Image 1 (cartoon, rainbow, N blue to C red):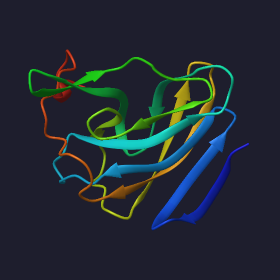
Image 2: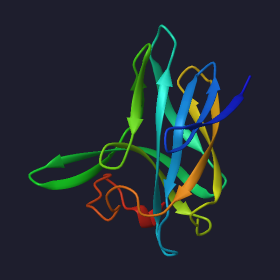
Image 3: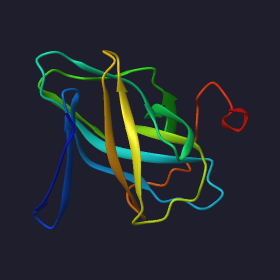
Image 4: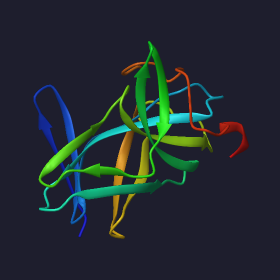
Length: 157
């Protein structure tokens, strides 16, 4: 059963969404210009189970596709690499953040503006699903205009 818990923590608002699959903390999407072909989505994904939790996909109504990515730095260049699965260790967590693991919302169907709320449902290898509400935020983290290396062209999706 999905539980939504919101409470004030320190200087900001911390949002938690929980299910048997895991817990999503601080979910947000970086606001982008109207012509952006992709948007980055970030969160901390906690796994309180005694076995690894394997994220294999995500769905949202606001984008044509959601992909799992990781940014790697090689020879001073940042490249985004598509990840078919991302494992969250047993009794552990993984931060999806700019410059590391993140969700890419490909071909946004509308411009998302700071303050808007977006539902994204995470999908796991065991068949479980975890819906979470992501807040659109302006100007956080590094720009998303670094070099993309997906072994495919975003314009042809």
